[in-house]
Every structure is written in structure tokens, then in C-alpha cells.
Length: 249
Ligand code: PGA
Image 1 (cartoon, helix red, strand yellow):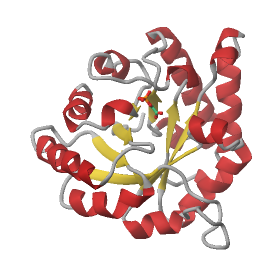
Image 2 (tube, helix red, strand yellow):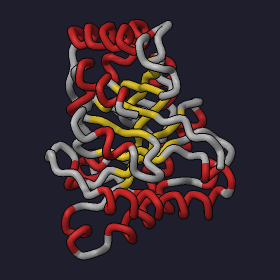
Image 3 (cartoon, helix red, strand yellow):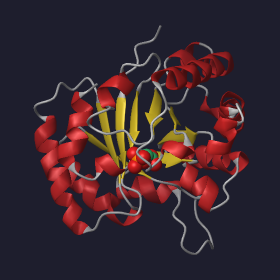
Image 4 (cartoon, protein in one colour):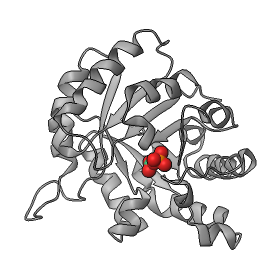
């Protein structure tokens, strides 16, 4: 089994102004006291990427975008390309987050196109999948997540660095968390799907859990088999909380 280096990634969503750089400074100080076995990333709004990257320089903090356009440039008012994220200092990008899928109608096919753009720009994609509450209640969680992971991951990921995040939609921002058994079931299924698709490489892909990860539940979640880190929303905004989650690995 390839050794997986866990990743704790913070998704700042549409939060954070220049004053949030103080949290980056605090986080980089705190990370000096934590063993460097865990990867740590912050994905701020596009407006903050260059400042966060400058502030994080010399620290262990990696910087990511939250979305990108499938094209590298063009007449797409308001959009940001993968190349622009990289140019601003990002090395990662979250793609297919449920808020993009539900609020912007992003399909698996579009997510796959964005993954290709990310790879072209040299960014490591963090590809999100997850069922909604109705799908979970209907007993379709495994099927939904398998379908999403098949259709959102292009074949061109073979040989490239990437990460998958399982984020049940009903757990995001709600304070509700699936049981350890439910997380284990989906993560095991995802591992099988990745291994079937990418062989040995699929065994080394980190599969993150996301959805209401907090300092108080992080250790329990991160102990679950095949959980290779966390994608953290609300609790990543304060360095004090985020570092507790990193310490829980
Ligand atoms: P949350 O968000 O931790 O605030 O639930 C997770 C996410 O949306 O990535």
C-alpha cells in the first residue's frame, strides 16, 4: 500500500477580507509546533489568493482556489481560470464542491472539464462528491457517490496528483455528521472505485472527509479507515480551531 500523506484543507468559501491574513500568520506560527507529516492547505476567495500565498511563503501552508473555469482564458465575465489561480500563487483547487453543483448547476461532466484545466495549469485538484439528504434517505448514497466519482474524474488523472473529498451535502454547515460506519462505508467504496480505475495509483490517493468537521469531532473522523484528511469549512476560518483539527491527525 502506498503511504498516504494526510491533507487538512480549509475552504474559506465567500468569507475573509484582508484582515483574515492575521489568521494565516497565526496558523504558520502554530504549524511550527506540529510535525510536518500532515499537509495543510487554505483555499481562500480568489481575491485573497496572492496575499495568502505571500503571507504563507516559507511556511508549510499550501494555497488553493475554490473553483476554476474549464477554459484558460476568454470572454467569460466574472470567471477565473486555473492558470490565473496558479499565477496568483495557488497550487491546488477545489472542484465540484456541492455549493457549485447545487447553486451553479455544475454537472459531473463540467467538473471533469475543470479537472483537465487544473491539470493543464499544474494545479492539484481536490474533487468533491457527496449525496444529498434525499439520496441518503432513499438508500442511494453509495450509488450516487460512485456515479459522481466515475463521471467527475477524467482518465487524464492517471499519473497526476489529485485528491478526492467525500462531503455529504446534508452535513455541510449543519453540524450534523454521518456515523463512523457511514463514513467508513463511503470511503471504502471510493477506495475500491479509485483502485479499479487507476490501479496502484488509486490506492495512494488521499480521500478527505468534509462536512461539519470541528475540533471536537476531528480525531474520531480522522481515525476512520480510508479517511486521508479533511476538507473543513467553518472551522478553518479561525487558526485556533483549524490547528486543533490538524493536531488531531
Ligand atoms: P463545513 O463545510 O465544514 O462548514 O461543514 C465543509 C465544506 O463545505 O467544505
